[in-house]
Length: 233
Image (cartoon, rainbow, N blue to C red; front, side):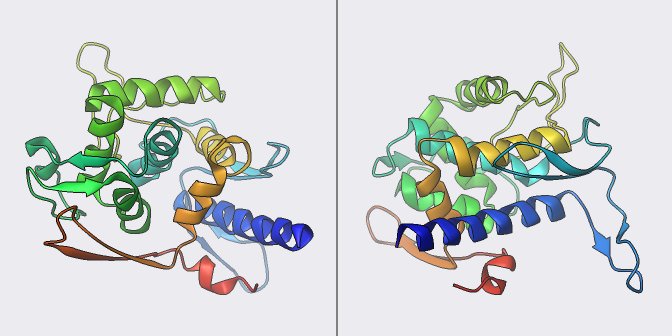
């Protein structure tokens, strides 16, 4: 049983790293020849050893968009209480699409918002999570940057919890990472974090239904990771 579970986890991890690779790249087979790579930067990493198997402009500093939410999720699991009921702020409701369309003053279970975050990439859910776990978006991004340093990501800088583009005016720093650092973050989430099982449980879920804390509104989330349906048990 343990061996079977280990093999299943390996499959899931393999799927995640394929997805990570595709988030950073677009590839197309060229008549049985080498894959034609259109990405500006890409990395394929062995999660166990940290060895980079393939890299293209791996150290280039680039915007990270919604892959930011990988760090948001793992920090929320490590430092938050998934069963905590959290309240929506006016700032969270102001986030642009893609969003859950939460309303100011509504309350939700933190765990439910993590499914919204990772399955549908909702920008407003990311802010609610950040404010609940970090006390504020600024407090949470400080935690994000510290975690990045802790796992060896020195070319990564977080300003938002959802990946929206942002610049720190006084320093000129932008919300950004490198392909190599992003691979390191994902490797940490699935191999080293103390909450890796919870992270995997959320991110491998095909669909998820929940309501707000009062049961007045219902939501349905679908996982858009096509690799999950491709992997055999």
